[in-house]
Image (cartoon, rainbow, N blue to C red):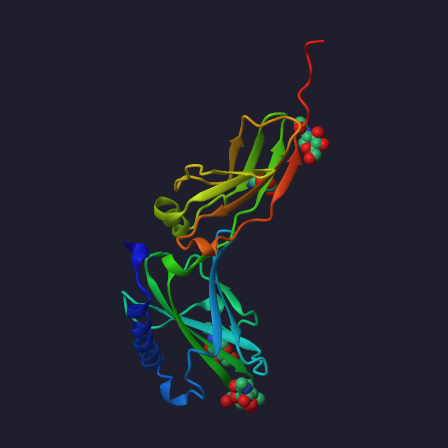
Length: 242
Ligand SMILES: *[C@@H]1O[C@H](CO)[C@@H](O)[C@H](O)[C@H]1NC(C)=O
Ligand SMILES: *[C@@H]1O[C@H](CO)[C@@H](O)[C@H](O)[C@H]1NC(C)=O
Ligand SMILES: *[C@@H]1O[C@H](CO)[C@@H](O)[C@H](O)[C@H]1NC(C)=O
Ligand SMILES: *[C@@H]1O[C@H](CO)[C@@H](O)[C@H](O)[C@H]1NC(C)=O
Ligand SMILES: *[C@@H]1O[C@H](CO)[C@@H](O)[C@H](O)[C@H]1NC(C)=O
């Protein structure tokens, strides 16, 4: 159900949001350009962190700092300022411990300033569960004669939102490829996965080249973000008969 949110109610609510968030923050009358088309926003799970980034569409507008504010749609208790996302020069911000609920819509406003002037204000909203783009985790492989250990790096402490992802939504795929043959492994993960996670791909053929990539299975299959592949040639089996 969480995943079945369809786009049109989201859009019309978005319109209200733009107005509501502006009213709440009292900026409606003072804005030079009230528009939600000034920026493209992306929300990404990167190294198990929730990162919101934005890019101005008009390249000739160059703010020297940004301030982010957001509001939680199901709990409209006002606009919140995130301290570590205020007066920042980077055009991204880590919201891991701020946005803790996955099936929630967050409305965001980013102001871009230069000196005392507000150059641009961008709005968007995210239904996080559907719109977060899942970057693949870091991993490495260790080869043996007939199996490969795939070590996937999970953080030593899981942020709350990750626990939720793991409990309900997140499926890790380890893809093994040898020649034309592709096999998908889907190790069971739960919210207790922390630190490094080792998955053994066994019953492999010696003297064969294997490539491995990992990714999280998103709801929208076109949105798969595969890791770069890592390949290894297994050693020929020792001939012990002679
Ligand atoms: C981009 O911003 C500049 C400076 O504010 C403005 O003069 C120009 O018209 C904008 N271009 C577009 C395509 O909106
Ligand atoms: C950001 O900078 C502005 C202007 O210097 C200041 O008024 C504001 O309080 C700052 N915001 C935060 C959260 O530090
Ligand atoms: C910014 O605002 C402060 C206080 O309002 C003022 O003293 C300062 O001159 C302004 N700076 C610029 C570059 O306009
Ligand atoms: C996990 O593995 C990476 C490299 O593969 C290593 O740098 C890191 O220290 C390991 N973390 C834990 C918690 O074992
Ligand atoms: C592991 O792979 C490397 C090259 O990919 C190869 O030189 C080495 O012999 C392999 N080790 C085993 C135990 O298969």
